[in-house]
Length: 114
Length: 114
Image (cartoon, rainbow over all chains, first blue to last red; front, side, top):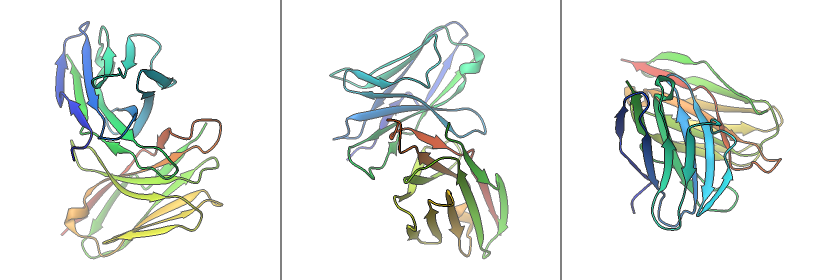
């Protein structure tokens, strides 16, 4: 039973390029969350999605960042025109439903902007 | 806004000793998580605490929750080197429609020395 799959594990982009991060939730999970971890910081919530719906994007920067979770395929976090400050680890988590559910995190994508 | 504070942020212990990590949070919540993160890795779920007075134990780790004091503790008994990692607590706000968003503490970097 595969866990949350994220790819790529490491991504290097030059300033101004686009970064696409992918996340496939655990089998049976329909809720996907993206978190960002800056160096020596805790994780910060970015966005919560269900299939074809963005439920809460209150943690997303207003510009250059977008997320989707299509009916078919993985969830995508897209960062356009990356800047050095976007360098971070981006984690995806998925969950089932009901009180007390746990969140399963993927291995993360470490984005480095050069 | 929910704030989560962990202390200490850095903890160096000798093998065989006991210690406690504290997690305080600022507003009402009845769902608290503890995670472990090894360098460059994802977050591993340790405990989910759902109610006041909840206590859970796994091996040398024991977590408890006091919702009235807004405090959780992670107690380490007879530490071993394998426990060296960063430990995060995370809290879910249980009102205002955001009962899915994890708010993380900054983490406690635990180093267990021989």
